[in-house]
Length: 267
Image (tube, rainbow, N blue to C red; front, side, top):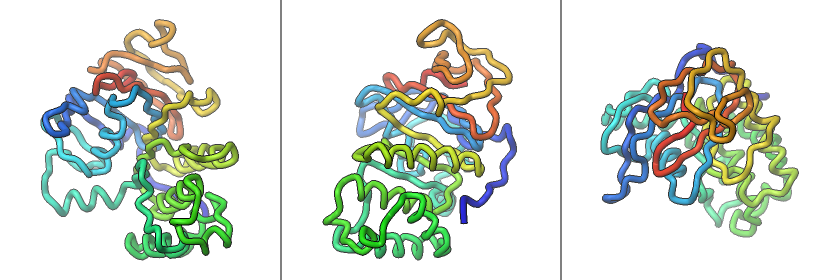
């Protein structure tokens, strides 16, 4: 089957946030985030514990409210509180959190079939997810509660694939996976972007150089975190408020840092 090609404009922004503040209780988990992500782009997000990485993903998934700011996700104005709008927003997103949210008493196959029915996915999409995550028939027939953490992670990722989302939000997708599983996920991310999906990926690990293939057409950023300059495939880190412009080819990748609830390395 493969990924369905998603129609998008090369310069269309899938995510655009300005001065975004998200409170968890009274704590500012995100404090003035500015972030632009083009359709078909892969953005890897790193940062210390508590920097707001998971909060950023959950907000982009339409799961959190915000205190102040403006912007849009997949064309949906974040200030629109209409429940129907929020629901449409969520249906176009595939979110993988720390918890897999699988039913432990159901088999892996039953979990995926239930999810496919819930999001009205075709069985061909389910089968494609099974193949891409290399889920064996034995694994599919096993109750999720009896699977290892890595196996549960792969089943959950297959659940993201079968949704065919426009925006993938992955929180440490390599967690608990062996080297083969990690390579499988890396290729999955690249292939999804090439098909037109946009991906925001949280990671604590260094991102392999070959996965960072940004092609900047116009660059006007602040000082690079490492060398004072920004190059293709490097950490282009400027001010959180932006003042920068990078035109990236579809399927390109870059790395940004979250620090103190603010993004460093936005365009």
